[in-house]
Image 1 (spheres, one colour):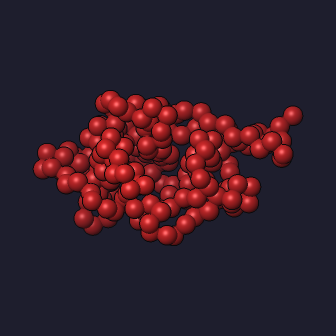
Image 2: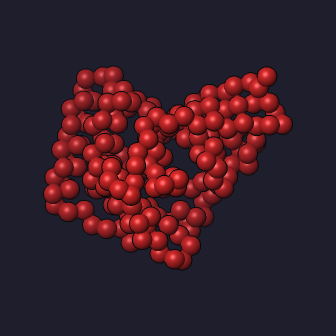
Image 3: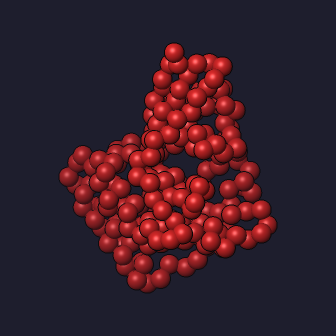
Length: 192
């Protein structure tokens, strides 16, 4: 009988040792978060300012749980990036399974939000309570992604935070809009 490991309990080290999943620092591996980003309109800026204010207000009344973060921050971003409209669709908390045949292990997990176009994973999101660090969900997200399966490499963008100077929600929306456009109209040069 296979032993079952929950994706939320998998470590980055285990993913590297068992699957060769490696962080690459090659800037050309994941350029989509920084190249040819569309502008955010004044109306979008106004809505994002409201999202930031709402999140700020909710932080004053802990605990701020995952579902609240998804509702207040993620849902408006996904809507503004048009991921609720065709040709995309959303799966909320889809289950993933990854079986290691030779080790008799099954890794089970759930993503919080998965944006798809047909069978292509466009955006995978794992949110955590407001007080958790970004590292808390990285291994969980990556182990779920292995069930897809991608190449066992991943890249990181810079850290986006609602309270960084310069309003990072604007930048996040630009990236989501760019991903949407790249999926709808591929560039033909090997990148999304």
